[in-house]
Amino acid sequence: MNIDQIIDAYIIYLRNIRRYSQNTVKSYKTDLMSFVNFCSQNKKVDVALINERFIKSYLMNLSEQQMEKTSIVRKLSSLRGLFRFAYKEELIKYNPASQLKNPKTLKKLPEIASVENISKTFELLNDSDENPELIKVIFELLYGCSLRVSEVCNLKVGDVDLQKGLIRVFGKGSKIRIVPIGDKSKINLSEYLNSFPPENYSEPFIKNKNGKKLYEKFVYRIVNKYLSKVTDIKKKSPHILRHSSATHMLDRGADLRAVKEILGHENLKTTQIYTHVSIERLKQSYKKSHPKS
Image (cartoon, rainbow, N blue to C red):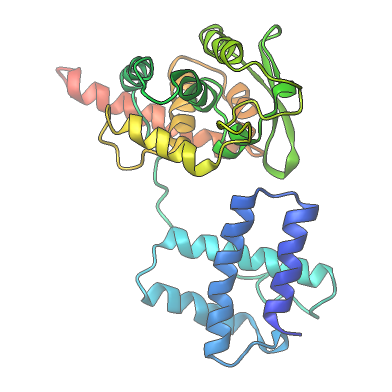
């Protein structure tokens, strides 16, 4: 059996059984096709010819190309998932990736926008020349409710209960979580619904002129446009607003487990990275202001 046939089966599994988002499936496929190309170059497209040593040579090749360790770790993770699936489905006799360990990497703390810059951004939105109600709702959902961009675009009218102040979110792997809506966010969400009253509960909560759900590229463009006016951080993506929201909650004493539930993280360790961001910001503040620093 060829490696690309197994990858095709794995992608179908991720999409239909695990219910991964379109972006996640696309990332897996991109990483795995890199391995397919390496197999083709070395004339080892038959999966029976692939062993642990060959996978190590692939990882070494990536390293020689000056690829960042974080990217190599991600590609190895994709391969582990692929071969674990293939072994479980009895497509291979043994798992050649089961004993492979990740190369050591330095964890990068996520970039965030300051509270002041977020406030300035919302002030700018009031003077937006392209549907200010819609733009404000996008920022409210990304920052005020800490949603992922895919979750924002897939949100339905029936998922938002303004009276109770709650949003039902279908997250990664179609897992459902309940996210609170703050009083300030409620105002902007209500104004948007008053300006664009929905016809039924199943239609997209935020939509384009044709009544269709927004493309993620549109949200990326909008976020980049307005964040660029208030901050010089390198990344100005929707996820920066989510990072900022989590960090600002912890800065103000929010319980770590509560933040984990709001973000929809499976593992508490994923949420703890924002604790490190808060501590790092505390250190920087100390160094700038304390006479003994």
